[in-house]
Image (cartoon, rainbow, N blue to C red; front, side, top):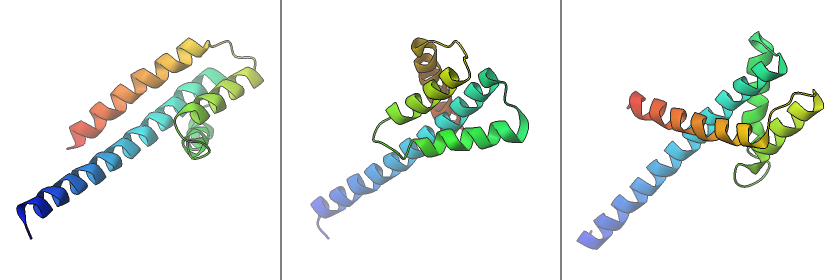
Length: 107
């Protein structure tokens, strides 16, 4: 194996690792967002955890995070809960930062 091959393999491993961390951070953020929205919707306990799972699963509907935003937005609107798009986006950003910090802390 040449030095170039080793270097390429190293880049591939780093890319795979980074993608895994990104996936974990997104899933964690979406779960926390689901719990945040559940609180706004007046959902608690096992029902809140089930709702958070729904939010996580909604991320697989489309590329990007718009599908997660859309689910939370529609659910809040359906229950007449007044939360602005900005507040949802801010929660998504803040919770992503928390998710990344949590994953980094785990090592």
